[in-house]
Amino acid sequence: MNIILFGPPGAGKGTQAEKIINHFNIPHLSTGDIFRANIKNETPLGKKVKSILDSGKLVPDETVVELVADELSKENYNDGVVLDGFPRTVTQAEALDQFLSDNGRQIDAFITLDVPEKELINRILSRGEGRSDDTPEKIKTRLKVYREETEPVLNHYEKQGVVKRIDGVGSIEEIFERIATKLK
Image (cartoon, rainbow, N blue to C red; front, side, top):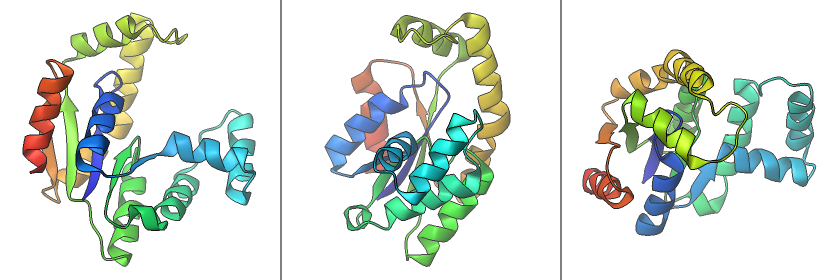
């Protein structure tokens, strides 16, 4: 089962990803983890990503897609994957769809966690991660960027009929039960 876990900052993606991975025994793929591993191992892609990040720029879609495709080619993802933090753009989504199609696979479920903005802001402020941009004003800006740049990915997968909307308010267990029910 190939799953994309989607939602705005503070929606609980990381928490629910762990529960899905453990419950369904599906490996997790995080672009951040891939970046760090490639940089640490000084792979050609890792060196490329490091120089981009060191210059303060965002990693271009084509490089992100290349890293994800390289990772998804590994045997441990043959029976499925939980994607978290990818795809972030429609270009990335289209490239992912093409890669999966070329390998006889597809996205089975696009799980989007729906959480009201006020709740998102409260969650982010209460997580206490100490990020410099964890102020109500900066969080609102991050949510605006999410709506403008990332939310179109949701529309892309709605056209494919794989979107499963989950009420992301409640206890961690209640939210996971909603997800598990939709995935059965």
